[in-house]
Amino acid sequence: MGNVKKILFVINLLILTSISACVKNDIPEYTLELYASTGGISEGQGKFIEGSSVTAVAMANENFEFSNWREYYSGEIVSTDASYTFSITKNISLIAYFTEASEKIMMVSESENIDMPIIPNYGTNVPKDKFQILTRYIGDLFINEGISQDKSGVVNQDGNTQAVINTHDLEQRGIYEPIVGGGPHIWMSKRPSDELRFNPWADNEKLVLQMNAAVPLVALTDKDGNTANSGFTANQAPVTQLSFGFYLYDESSKKTFAYIIPVYESRGTYQESANNSDTFVSFVSSPLEESSEYITKSPESARLQSTPFSEKKFFKVSLTRENLLKGINDTNANMSTDLSNYQVTFIGVLFELPNYVKDGHNISMVDISDFSVYIQ
Image (cartoon, rainbow, N blue to C red; front, side, top):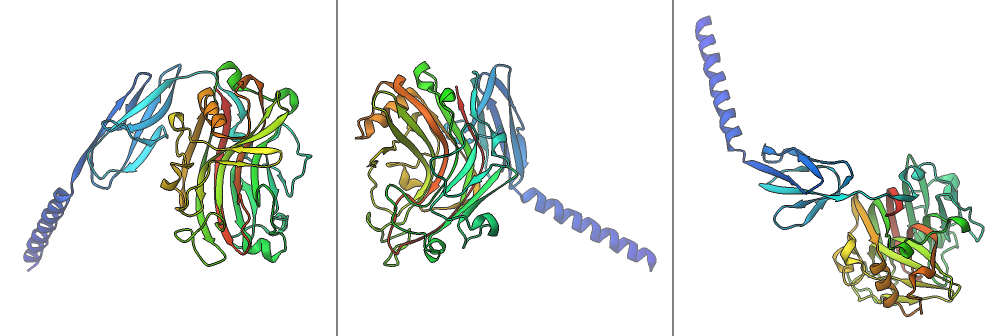
């Protein structure tokens, strides 16, 4: 009897092994092919079972730096991470692009994102040469009570900055009022001292701003109950905007201009004007298609607006002489086209509600890390 049980056990084991092998053989297998441009190598290619997590690694040679991964045949950029991990669902060919490294002059480093001081309701006396968080028109309740979906404010921990603007909260506290030239906002920013102001375009260099950011929640409602998906009008649209931004001081006219480059905005579906001027500060906003990523200004804005995202994306803008001139020509603010006249007097990341809407409400959250600025 014992021998019979042993025989049955062996038979069952063989059947299970056979079934397991058949199931395994039925799972599709895909090929990852990797290439590299001049200046580096790529590793990680091979054959993988469908759904497997695979990692393509790009390594730059000396005097080169990694730029991005692209699909080999379409040229579409799929990642800017040198170590790119994804789930494989088809045969795919990728190429790692490298560029010649040039000296970077750091204006804001990633290490400065850690333990930033917070200045609530900042005025004109902002400390210089220090990367910090400035808030305006959201009170200072968050300093003691923290932030949440229902409480406006900002916190910085271990290099990660989380911010909330909730107009319900602001209105209940009596501080959501009509504001000329803007609305409740939070700056992660640095104001260089006079001797440290810079102008990369005078020497035909470019200004590069980059960060990782998520917009996990946007809830917009106007006074009539219309939401971000439909029904908004130009006059009654609550707006959320996350932007790179900096101030340009024109020595010839003695005026300061704010150059704003949104990476996310949600304002409904109406066509936005690219120009908006204030008494002393003029706002310039123009697409930078040639050397920028994730551009959300008109005509590109419809592609990303009104769709929050919880996982951080990498945003990078390279502002060349050509890009800056394009922005200058796009505005009606009489800015000088002589780029040697300009100095950067303020630079950072701006999270704001750019316009006030009576009885309209907005709950918006952002998550930002790894912000840096350099000249190259």
